[in-house]
Length: 374
Ligand SMILES: Cc1cc2nc3c(=O)[nH]c(=O)nc-3n(C[C@H](O)[C@H](O)[C@H](O)COP(=O)(O)OP(=O)(O)OC[C@H]3O[C@@H](n4cnc5c(N)ncnc54)[C@H](O)[C@@H]3O)c2cc1C
Ligand SMILES: *[C@@H]1O[C@H](CO)[C@@H](O)[C@H](O)[C@H]1NC(C)=O
Ligand SMILES: *[C@@H]1O[C@H](CO)[C@@H](O)[C@H](O)[C@H]1NC(C)=O
Ligand SMILES: *[C@@H]1O[C@H](CO)[C@@H](O)[C@H](O)[C@H]1NC(C)=O
Image (cartoon, rainbow, N blue to C red; front, top):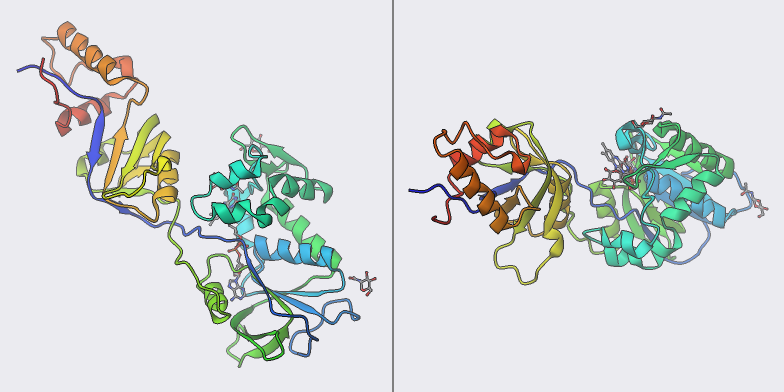
């Protein structure tokens, strides 16, 4: 019997998803009924006493605080109140490992950037995205005293390497413009009034009965909070169920644990969708893959999870030598076999592929390789 193999292609059945983060994020949803006079006294008015109209922003994250600043910049007479149930900008603080990658510095073409969004790329290509793209974000921060740098992979960070530079900038700008920020309160209900406004139920952290506020405009910027989706549906919007994104794959193959900790700098991974009606090119990703004690992780896998989230199915195909043609692979292995005919398979392994020995032993153990006979 001769020793042969097809190529380093593993067929892993039963890919289970481990939802780590939910990154469905539409940045915010703005609603307007029509313009009428503000009548409630439950929320103290923001600084400009002459203004009559009120915008309530639900959520003091990046989207809410920036949205409030933008509204106040464009309409200085508007009363802008941000209601935040916890601490403002708390995710901005931890983003980018505490450095905060502000935007993408390589995709100056907004269309190109939008194509990288698995869900919502059509919406991003529209007015919303063209009105304020990554270049505008970078200019905005520069104009407001934050020096930014673009790293080789396109991520943009403050030169200070600290997310607090971004937080300080956003907070001082919203204070300067007179945005009112109220923390420790959550907007829990929303309904349209007969007068064409929004009646909002606002609850304080202490379990007192909710206050009611009438707003002329409402910006829901509640991140991935279920409450935000609930508010939107109370107002008649239909909600597409969010799906997890950017998660690692749990693979039921105990022997894979032997490879735990190995990084493969370049593999080709394909999610195979059964009964797929159309071919999704993004379901094949080339890039680094890390074997963990539970399965696969690394950039190529995370990208697959984002593109495959809605259709995630049974089989992941991993090609560990994507640059070696199948015929070359066969001939390298045949030559190797002839040169080391007397050695134990586990002792000799072809170095041409740049793969670690632990992986060679693993491949031998899997017996998935023997496809052609010499
Ligand atoms: C660990 C980690 C690292 C990340 N790193 C990066 C990164 O480097 N760069 C990047 O761009 N993104 C990063 N992200 C993603 C980023 O945090 C989000 O994309 C961003 O915070 C979304 O902003 P947002 O304002 O839409 O939502 P959020 O930041 O979630 O803000 C929503 C706010 O609304 C409040 N809220 C919700 N419901 C209500 C309610 N009913 N009433 C009142 N308040 C309410 C919440 O308390 C919250 O403060 C990271 C995320 C995590 C978890
Ligand atoms: C308040 O309103 C007046 C005019 O209505 C405007 O000139 C002024 O800039 C506003 N001030 C603030 C802080 O928005
Ligand atoms: C910041 O970096 C993370 C991880 O690399 C990425 O998922 C995210 O999209 C980046 N954010 C921006 C705005 O580019
Ligand atoms: C910022 O962080 C990057 C990456 O960790 C590092 O290369 C750089 O030297 C840091 N710069 C400063 C000013 O600390």
